[in-house]
Image (cartoon, rainbow over all chains, first blue to last red):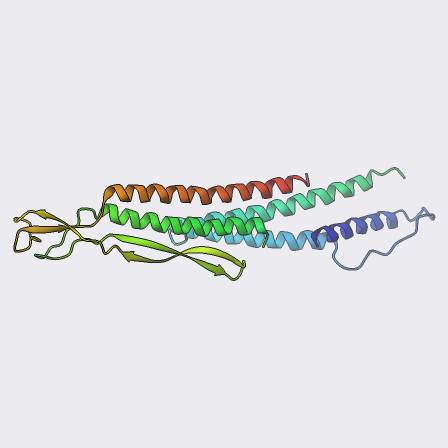
Length: 106
Length: 136
């Protein structure tokens, strides 16, 4: 599901790049596909990562206070780190794909 | 939830259970000399943990939990010490049924089991990292 939304994000950028070339009549202007945009994807997953980050901070504080189980703290921090790493990796990948499209010779 | 995250989550339950077990071993070790205060009274009785597997609904996986701590009902040892306040009419004092050697082994076992679960966490973390590495 994540891959298909990335694909649609890439095709959205392709069509955006195409529509930017208004002077070139030979390229047809495709309407941006409906559904999730890349910005939406990044925002949604980043919000999730931030939420997990908050949770891990909360658990960390509880752990310092001696209220939370040490293993729960470690797991929460681990989850937050995983989520952030995933978002960053996907963002980097899509941005690099976008830059590749921008560098494409016309 | 991703299977790899599930794996480390399940392992964390194992770590928790082993931590509880370690706590009980510590109690036994600490109370190896805890005698009664009344004549003929019972000294500290050794504790044991029992584990059970439990279905964690959120993950659809079986995790381990401590069922409860039970008392070791084996016999107490006796020492002849008539001057002790806990000595019975014949002058014998009951000693806790804790054998430090057994506790040491239990300690070792808890440590090994904890480390094994920790290894699962490390490996699954590594696998997640390596999978994300594919995107780079």
